[in-house]
Length: 483
Image (cartoon, rainbow, N blue to C red):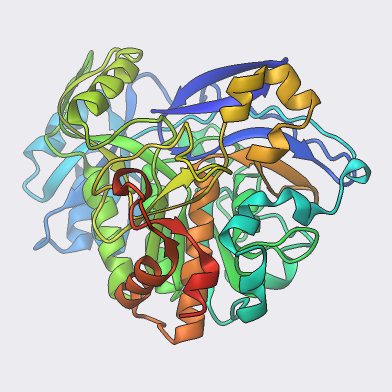
């Protein structure tokens, strides 16, 4: 359940979704006037009304193969597996769910967490009308002390940031830093069989939405624009097709990135999940949402193998540590789908242990209007854009007079151009890149705790900052690479 702001017919509207990226797509600047065709997540053919998807996690003492065989005997089709974690997704008739509850090998199960992404609408202008693009990178100027960090250390190609997202376009500003091994985790047929263009080919890493390419530019762009670490390596783990994803795909991507010895795993995405009971017309769920436990196991798996996991908080301007406020927000969103709950809301993976959790600030170093926050939730903040000028001037002046350039963030987009966006999705890769610089410069390969401590101690401006909003402080890359 996530709000997403976009421009459509000169008006701004908000939409809700499940698993979502932490961004606000707004404008596209294409060097060759390249338009991205909007793709709307709609109905999904091939799934009968009686078929349902469930996510299951096995008991620790049960052999995996025996667990899977037993589930199949109960009449379920296994459609996705994360063998390393004992986690699977199955499809079966609604009436079969009682068999899962009675199965002594199943630790827990629930209906799979479903996500729908809204379509994107973008505007284009000619690149020839723009000044030198560094002049538009107020966010990079703030984070790098006006580019001073580049003169100290720009990163090592031996250090890899794994970007779990919508794929990656080989943009001219990124191509030199894309390392072999990117892979597709979206299965054949895509989200519940509704995306026939998805072949399941591991090499199908093309970016259909532009989000992953935009995020990558914040990490490693080295051309018309600069990322935080222009010489670092990047690799894509694709978990979004044309708009929707299963949470289990993201969990598997974390495991695969860790197996690939990726140094930093960037998650500019997330969901609000319930640990407790949920009630709908189909009855009540199990007590603990399986996806929460799956994420915990995947993050622990990654950390044990030396990877730092970095994730964005939500984009709803909510104090997640104010339980009453957070639950009221969630109840209102779930009521739209006729669902109620009894339990605790988690922003996953941002609120889980062993995650570097990132909030967003704007050009004034104030917490962005859209950024979630909370004492003990936020570890660090970084520039992700804002909407204060938008609220001050209104959309017409904001666009016509170029105020968006002063508070939105510019980055790489599909087709080879550049676009303006805002969101915690944009702040998070800056922190991932900074951790990559720290790991490379100070020899902290496979030492995630030490890399994090260095970041929090040296890589921030923290004087007078409220930790509820900023965590340890606002990212300062120059300080991170000069201590």
